[in-house]
Image 1: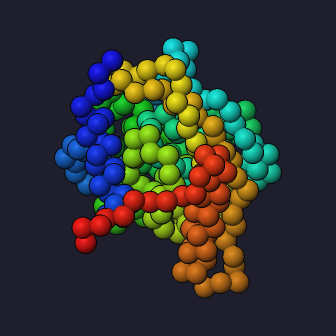
Image 2: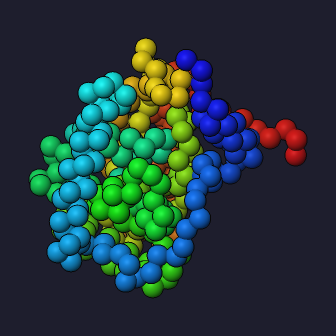
Length: 279
């Protein structure tokens, strides 16, 4: 099967961004979007219509991903370290590497039997909510998503919602690398947002890192379907003896170092990034 020209282009872009150390940038040509206004989002599903749409979207999302699993197009091979998730009671922030539209479902499937009836909320970029990519509009709008916003007033509403969700014991998934790099196996340096939320809410972060292996099954783009191993690592807690900026930085460093250890142990190679030699 011939490989998709689009996916080959993505791989070229990823290699270029790695060389230039532009870790957080997207590689997809995202459609134009617009700022998310505070009256256009109901983070906690307080409105009846949004409660109903959330139920519909979650069922549709589960059916979509379970069909991929049944057809061998999404493979969750193993979950390691589940005891690290179970050990943390109450609200928690989860960080995970971002490389696939299915990685959030792999996280959910790993923990869903251990959340005491709670849900997994996902922080998403503004454009994925205001102008969601097809065919994921319903899921982006209503599958327990927490869209960020370029508007300060909307972000105040976002922060209040996060505080409420954590107080009632929910789990919130954040991708600290930011942009999705398709099938990229290495951990990337992280943005500070997840760790700022952890410090602000005095909440632990549980690092997840998903490793991949080629299977014998080809996807629709001519590449091997990846078998995921979900690694759940020990929780990282804010160090209250440090000033606020140092607390965030320590959590970010510890999260990144934990990911690097998993990467090097699983793949059996040291983490090395390509460098831009044209500078």
